[in-house]
Image (cartoon, rainbow, N blue to C red; front, side):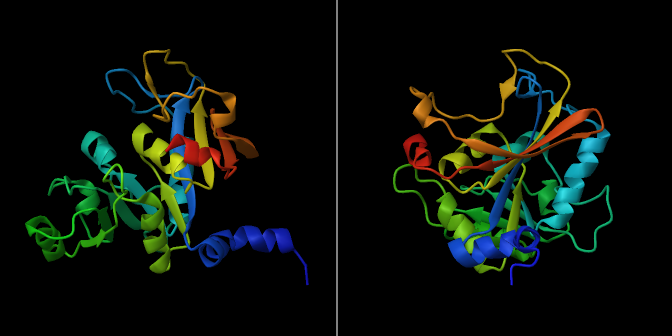
Length: 246
């Protein structure tokens, strides 16, 4: 009893999260410059980080049960969200959060199956069209105030499907929404040795804070160099501050 307990908990952390809290372990992956910018003001962002860092991201994808993104990222970047640069025995489930089913038919995330679309839409021709392509649509209850997908309930529904871990790769708005909902457990940030300046786009589109007590607190768990970039892993301290940011 207790033999290699810490190692065992780390290995089983996704399962333990699902068993104890009813949702998957959620890792938010971000990539930015040293001054925390994800793209120039005109949207240009490829590539901020190195090929080594991008390969490391594919390794993370391969280890996750699911990889999630939002409709804004799909419209802007049309990601495939598959594992390509490392050996992979099975592709993770691709999850698209699309409250109004705005995804286009030719989006790469819809190609080849193995995709789940989480939405607030309950019925209609669009759901039937996606189902005809063997793309599963999961309807999630909406938030009472905003009318968007309830992120906590969405994670609970993903856990009910047996998903232990979800890796999120998305934009500043959904990054902020997930943090504010208190469903992010850790952030993996790849920082490139470059600076974009104040007019460039940021990582988290959070509302303005009026006091330091409203900040989201993190705990650094690991810092290492990946090629020319830094990879920082930080755990999110779940506090009442998340309620204040909603």
